[in-house]
Amino acid sequence: PEITQVPIGYFLEDIAKDVAILKGERVREIGFSYCGNIDQYFFEQITNNCPHLESLELGFDPAQCELDLSAKKQKLIALVRQCTRLHTLKISQCSYLSTQFIKEIIEACSSRLMHLELYESNLLSNEFFANLAKCSRLKTFKFKPIITKFKTHPRAGAILSKDNLKHL
Image 1 (cartoon, rainbow, N blue to C red):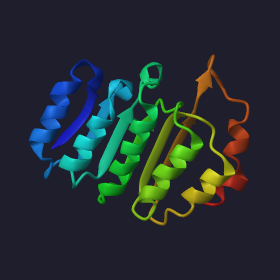
Image 2: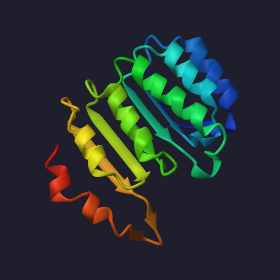
Image 3: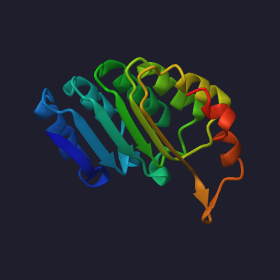
Image 4: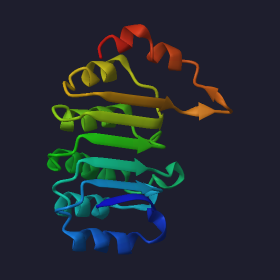
């Protein structure tokens, strides 16, 4: 089964219960939008109940991502570490996630990460690309920086330069 494109903020408690009920032995792919409303309990439920998870897609609502941010980040890192079959990550509207946090996520699954997509993200550093180069199974990397007023951030070209991409 596939759970995808669910606007989670509207019925979070029901979804958390459903994930717990599923005992996700069969769940391989989960996708949620508007995740800014969730707390760390939700990530715990996925970690504990979906051991065979292979693909995780999260769309955050930056306006709602301020609450318990540290706890959410730690539980998301734990999810990535403990779901040992997870090889695909797609995170959108992740501008509130620091480069350091994204680095930790990559390190948590670098030996199995095959597909990584970061949309509406902060600019990525040379260190990020060096860490990404350690992902020996990586097949797909997609990145879209934060766009303001229909214009790409002025450093986007420098960050996505030939020198940085040669690490991949």
